[in-house]
Image (cartoon, rainbow, N blue to C red):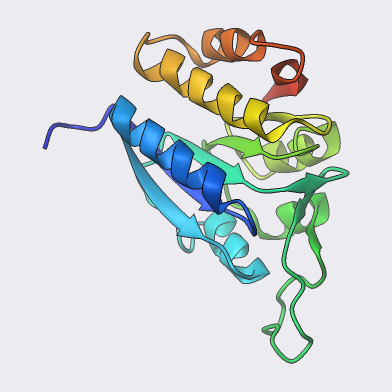
Length: 184
């Protein structure tokens, strides 16, 4: 097996499996090595963001979630199911990101409605990430997938810089123009 073109960790939130399968297949076809993280509870996301369950070699961390008002949508568990100290409720927000994340140098793409809102992006940047990309409003699911595929195509196949790939992917249509990029 030849060396992968790119190393991608794909963390999959609740009810995002269809898009994630398509994304994984496409990225692997482009030559990326994709590691999947199927997240069923808040502590699974905590483990990825904290580095407890994350690969050392990684070019991009893609958080494929549904989002609402700048928060990651999570499955709400029964009180007796939550572990001690685990975030509770149906959302994982900027405060949770600041509390749990250790993302030194990581390039993050948050694929989901409103996950590119500035307050959430700033929390990720304070957690040490290199850059943070996400849509700042409610985006069509097909457009969301299209943005990431085009972005990664430009990075892998055309050897574009992150900024160049971002501008190309953002310019596809009105929906993909909702994506914003934030850098440390």
